[in-house]
Image (cartoon, rainbow, N blue to C red; front, side, top):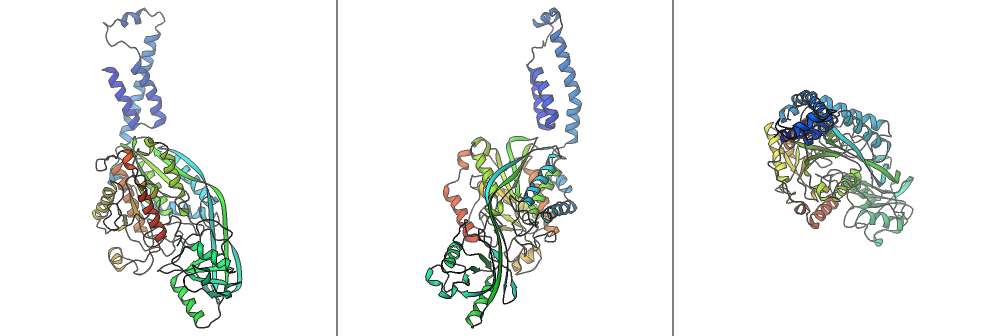
Length: 558
């Protein structure tokens, strides 16, 4: 009986006492539990103790008892100082001042590193170092950096036509180049066939509509026809962002512009107006070492883990203070507040690198877990927070039950969605669904059957009248007019959305770190979704690119 009590005390220490103290106490308790100490004066061992000339056994027993006596006050103190986490109490520790201070730190980092925090560059490396430093000094998490190497492609562009500046976005993997006084030539049809390109395009810049074939085909055909550059205009509302898919010597320097700008240029050319332009594209393509930052609470059940995360990199064009500095700081702020409490389940944080280049960091992490079914099965749910403070925001929740977009997340995703809905409703706030379209770091978790959810305030999609009625703001204006631009800076945040979404993060952490009652465990083999699930996400990503409800993640090929 005494041995059972001692072992039970050891379990209590593991659950409540910081690791540096707990490991010391556990060692003493384990030794004490397994020592051959008499439990009765009538036990045969009693005479052995008395007959021990050196009294060594009795001395060891006294030392262990003394050590345990000294440890108990520390244990009691630790338990008293770290109450179990509760949603309201955790939310009370979240304030806008701390959030904005974190955002300012990311702005300062970007300002010191050529205006961005793109993966593998000085800005992102400094972001990683800051996150590690902030987490380690809390003495509450085990923290490590996970390195991986990927190809980096970053570019910036400026464009003026007939002296008027036009917002032009370089396509990922475009080559660089500087053109002055180049002639603009319209390309017939959609530029998907060599015959679409007139002879006049040689030595000029090709103006091509988006559609049918991918961007790489258009960039390749333009160069093959002798063009020194290509401008692709959108066939939908909003700016055109995308990728050529991979580096190649066969592309002309290629940028994207809006449908409205493109159609205006086509009309001018059709009216017989000669148009000249200046185009400057600065492009960097190289292999870079990048890092995920992973941190896990030392306390709690490490076989039943809640994981939350967001990406820590920006695009090359700007500092990324909303995308996804807001998610990064939101998660970090909740992580700091959580240190005032104890949890029953472990909480793991993921700050992902290279999300802007195809969710590379989160995919790398999930792949590393896939080598062990035991490890990946420990993650009971993943929550993603990418862009939670857009300046013209909506309060959007990932559509876990598939009721809005006809794509259902893994079992339990519906529960996560419902819990977020109830949170906003408890505060008298509206909410709308957003699609699991594979555009952010939840993708790798969903593809492995891990229940997932999260929040999003919108990217370059335009706010509807119904959304303006729910959330305020400007109808027909992008949720984030500075999405993937240099203007995504410290002024590009909606404080109300920032605060309430971070409180929603706190609520979800408090709820799931204490109980998985509403999210039953799923067998590992059943978590492995069929390949068509992953393909659905991939196809959706390629078709939607960054449009409407799809933040980040690399961009469209079409």
